[in-house]
Amino acid sequence: MKDYEETTAFLGQWGCFQQIVFFLLCASTVPNGFSAFSVIFLADIPEHHCQIPDVNLSETWMAAAIPTHLVHGEPQKSRCSRYKISVIRNYSNEGFTPGREVNLTDIEEEPCMQGWMYSQAIYQSTLVSEFDLVCSQQWKQPFTSSVYFLGVLCGSFFSGQLSDRFGRKPVLFMTMMVQTIFTFVQIFSPSWEAFAVLSFIVGLGQISNYVAAFVLGTEILTGPVRVLYSSLGVCIFFAFGYMLLPLIAFYIRTWRMLLIALSVPGLIYIPLWWYIPESPRWLISQGKVEAAEAILRKAARKNRITAPEVIFKQSEDEDNIFEPKERHNVLDLIATSNIRRTTLILFLVWMTLSMGYFGLSLNTSRLHGDPYLNCFISAAIEVPAYVISWLALRYFPRRMSASASMMLGGVAMYSITLVPQDMPSVSMALEMVGKFGIAIGTALMFPYTGELYPTVIRNTAVGACAMVSRIGSTIAPYLIHLNAYQKNLPHILLGTLCALSAMVTIFLPESFRQPLPETIDQMLKRERLKCICFSKEECLHEDIKTASEIVEEAWM
Image 1 (cartoon, rainbow, N blue to C red):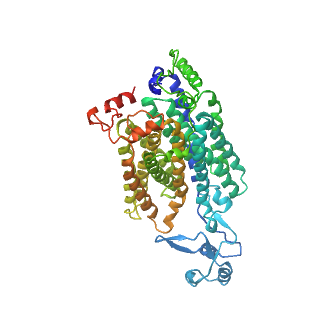
Image 2: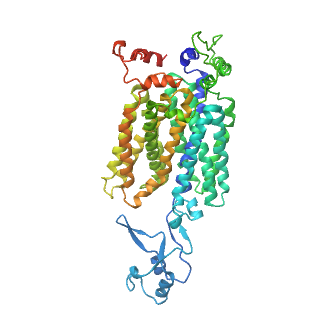
Image 3: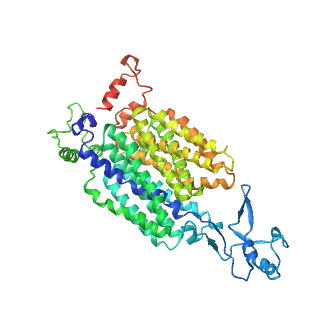
């Protein structure tokens, strides 16, 4: 059989069929922008202090009941302690003035026995204010995000193998359903524990939906349109959902009502089942040639093109490639030393990018200024990042582009450590620059990874990398809390990881302007390619094509 893209070239690259697939699959990623970052507003920590009981304290003693501590050299009202009520009540009854006749530092402190008072200046209610996730229970606040990403981790692993086994389309819609239904069910959570369990299930569907949509579009679309889809299309629509989140949250400031608003859009995608086809590439890899031809003939009718009488012709000297092949699994990602090296490098890069991307995104509510505006800027900065990643994928080698973007993120993180404390706006700007570089790298790695692995294990490979990356996103909420020990520690760690990932990326194979491998053997041939030769005499292996042949074949 000829190369798949050569065989299906009669369809063209941007007909009605491709346009429908492109925009519908892109639109399916909008709810992922809601889901991935909703915790920024659902579980943000409002300003709070201990509840002061009504024990006839004077106004001056009521105002002085909360001690002031130094945090990073700045005075801050305590959130987890108060002066002992029985002591300050006696001082109040005797008419003493705090700070003048009584030295406040000599008064014993006690924990918040009657609970906390939460400011409603920004939020009317969050998970933190409803379930008191502060002080001794504050570990639950970052763990809320971590539980969600643990679900994403598991979903990345299982959805990849399920998608390779049962098809891209069924897994895409199944995970979209899981994400929508359980986001709505979270509204009825009676406790933090119930909410956390449901968050895990929502996470199972979130990345599974994204990866399935990404791979499905990558396998259906061809040429420059595939590059546009994988590097710009899905990413821009994801960012669009991300940008809508702070706008919706600005007007809905109770966490339960916010969840309702974020779950309803998922119902819109039910009719898409009848418009989004299964991947013909996957059907062929499973020996279902007739089903693949039926999809391509229907696509030809939509594009007003006459399809050949026989689309997939088998050569006499070829093995029976239309028969179902042996089953592949995640162990194929470490089958040989070359594939194993590629996989391990990608695991490190994906984990670093995910840790940086989600760590900086979740940190927007802690930055200087309005949390809604900060979140919107953090989302909007992704749009130019994705445009640049698309241009890089079209015109520049993958390794150079990915390495440069991660190095930009690392330099920005290190630069933050040099900014004085009285210049928070500069720190915020540098953090956005770091997010910009990391967003470029994240957008590049999805198509780059998909190009490195063959069709038979492509979804498993992308799913496995996404799974490993969720180790980084699971750690991310705790990474930003390390500033409690040393203010710049999160930025130093993240900058170091970005720099390391940028350096090891140069050891990956280059896939720029090369056709997608269909089998593991084709991947191994490209793994052995040390460089693209510009004449047959320069090639070290007789099975290596010249650069002009590779470019011509990739863009047919």
